[in-house]
Image (tube, rainbow, N blue to C red; front, side):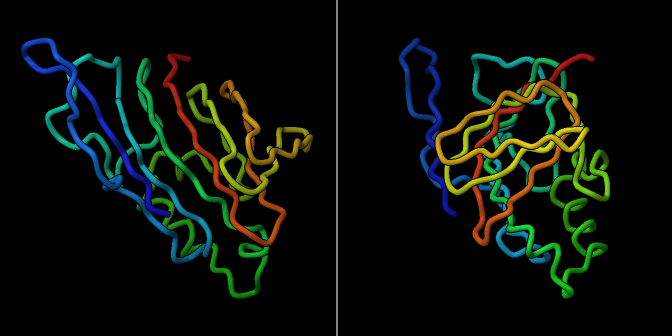
Length: 176
């Protein structure tokens, strides 16, 4: 998926301006999990500023989870569970790829996909359907247009369909 990103700011005279307009420069389609992808739209590691950064704030190999007060805007396509249940699936290779392209997330992922991040996450399903699973196995089905506010709870995302599901997230970093 190609995503256009338009960034605005303010020039020295106080006039609003377009800082950039083009394809998001950092995205990754996971080779080990066909249908799995991440698009790094924007990353603010800590408290935001009204001054746009001097260099590209996203990095395909850097953190996804921001520090306290920061924000991360990422679009994720979830591969169908059939991909990871396939006899051809190589979990070791998949773990290495996740570690290369989302190292901070790789550190918190458990073998079954459960994880907890130090963030409050806002998500909206852009396409398809995905299931949000919590600690006790409770699940809720989310479809196109549904939203979720994930307040640092341990969870996993499950795609029980045969097609990728795409969710846009804004993660906000927390202290505790």
